[in-house]
Structure formats: structure tokens, C-alpha cells
Image (cartoon, rainbow, N blue to C red; front, side):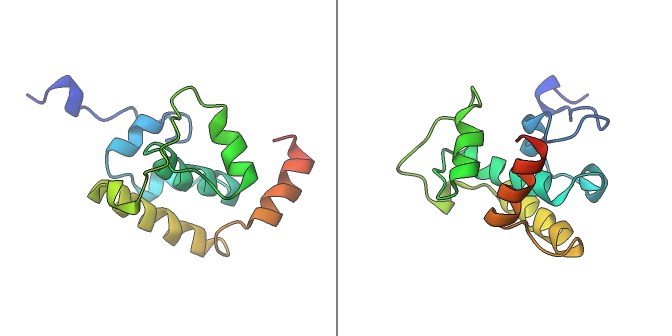
Length: 116
């Protein structure tokens, strides 16, 4: 029997709502209902969980509001795990099917419309 720590979170909750799901390889199905904006945030959540500091003012402001986010000036991509890189590749693939990753300008325009 698997230990509780090995148990995967319920699949009916988005990894955007429960970033601990990023501790496991996620599936295309988990990303199916996410917008380009949500995918950008989720992909960058992986980096944020390791303390990455963002050039994007929008992303930095978003992650600064997360209680779990602790900036690490020493962050490098070497801090990413194999699971992280697998999940990032999957998210980029899904973003590509939707027209590519959302740009900073697109997210800013989206934020003005949605109040983000």
C-alpha cells in the first residue's frame, strides 16, 4: 500500500488551485480547461515554487501574494526536478496548441479586462 505522501491529489481540482499537484507528473486532461493565462501562471508556478524572481511585473506581483512564495536570488534552472521539466514541457505543448504562450502584453490586456 502506498504511503499517504505518495498519494496523488484529487483530479477534480486544478493544479492551479492546488500547486502541490505539481509534485507529480500532470496530465493533459488536468490542463484541458485552462486558458492561456492560466497555463502561463501554472507553468511559472513551477519556477516560483523554487524561488525564481520574475522579470515580468505581473507574474512577480501575482506570486508575491502567495504565502508559500519565497524569492531566492540564487535560483537557477538546476533547481528544477525532472518532474518540473516534464510538466513545463507538457504545459508548453498545450500552450502551443492554443496559439503559443500568452505574452506579457496579452496578459496585461487580459488583466485590465478581468481585474487580475
